Image (cartoon, rainbow, N blue to C red):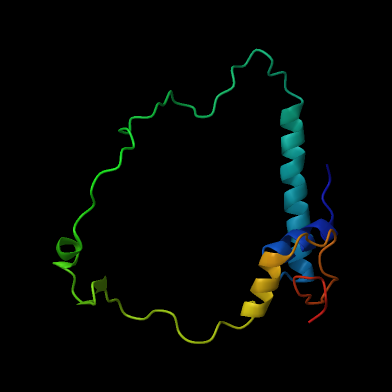
Length: 135
């Protein structure tokens, strides 16, 4: 399987990555070499090899998952540096306003309710919304 620049642009669009033409060219080559390596591995005869999921024999050493009472709220908050109305209070870390280039709430809403993605991704250099419309 070969990979095209169009495929790289589409995957970048799905991942919300802005790639320059130069980066698309670089990633197309790199991903092509990775797929070539995987294809080379497919040539190996593995019929006598037992399938493994991990190189070491591993097994689950966890206890059974049984419900039990949790820590009472007063005990959980006893050593909290700041508590209010039965909750931990923490400093605000999210500033109002989103970073440049972040999708708007409306774009995120359209993305989550969309039924399918564009098979080809955005046109080169064009910024398209989740529904494929230019915005």
